[in-house]
Image (cartoon, rainbow, N blue to C red; front, side, top):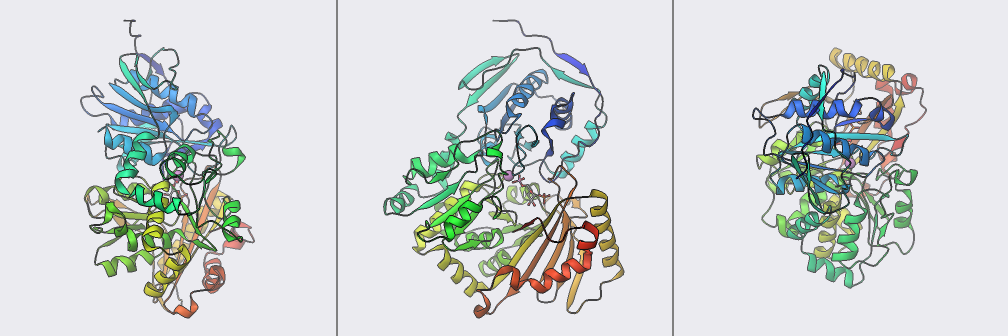
Length: 546
Ligand code: VG1
Ligand code: CO
């Protein structure tokens, strides 16, 4: 056996700005490539999470969405994991694991945790973004306490540990000795497919496809391509060509792998055209988001969450009912009405999946979701794009109705929450912060608006561990439940992105067929006026409307 090289302690210095945001640390690829940037952050994560006894005997899971710089980052993390004393690393073949698949691998193997390399829906390529986050042993994103500790470590780091080893070929499945550690290269897709088979009735779905059902799934040249091919075209026998853009590319073909009506426009157009398939769906860079489009009808993610909750019992995994639901604060209140009727609790959390972890672990909720096209359940501790599509397919299969019929019946039964999000991207950071600070001061001083119920800065107390998260978004809420919410994005890498979320509840069925922007026009105008958006951002209109 070859000699294990000695651990190298490389002196380094703190680098400013390594504060994880809504979902890990995201920066430009060029920033990650510069000097010791990535090594500093990885060591800071290890320093923050290291148990008293060190990493001896522990397993780390490693994988990413395959974007540019994924390969180099995988090699660096492997060397550092070996030098920091991990016993074993499970790495997806070629360094690939979708975010929900990584969560599953962590849980299934009782790993200590995992590093997921992704900037999700952000653009990729040498000029694009890269990102990295740590998920704990429950498979979920590190809670705020841990991300704060990582940041603190990054501010006092003076060395990182590595080993002088040749690159490891991670295309070869199986176990490899690497320093004093074992690296197991695992099939990126197999475990995930098995999990989905446990949750859903694959034979019933297969019969539906055999009967002529048509799906269009846009993988956006991102990580879900291989998963979608294996499940939809492989296991379920959907027609070849069901999966569009199914080959993962390092730069996502030059597009943003963001499944919304702007970046998945081709899919939207296909679903609105004559002869459209029965269901259209898409997922994002790392496979945790989903876009659902019925024939002639876009289903907003907030509505999708409500409809999935109302129908989840149709899938074998949830046939016994659901314990509760949760939604992020800016997500519409549509799911609240479903929870009320089911007689289960509904929790309102800050934006970001890390806030669902405790509720899922404690068994307080079964389903949860966010307005940003994220839905998931207790099967993993991440949102899950393909899972959401399979649950929709199950509902269509069991109810033998179109997505349009299901949506219309849902609205007739529960009322409709008209909902939109307006994003002002890459605006000047100083101006954005001042807009929020001034609006917050205005709210504190007392807003004088007709039928105002309350206005505040959302603060969350975790019902499981009592931790408090402040400043999670400004809310202006009216007596009928209509709302305007403002917050700054925590995933962008250039300037600031202002998100304005607008919602109005409509009980009257005869008013359920309106255009969303028209239905919300008054509130949209008020939202602009209250925060002086045009004056302060120099933008005539939002960059993205969803
Ligand atoms: C956005 C979404 C949020 C989501 C986060 C990560 O955050 O609003 O709901 O959890 O992205 O999703 P922000 O701070 O930019 O609003 V993903 O698919 O990037 O892991
Ligand atoms: Co994502």
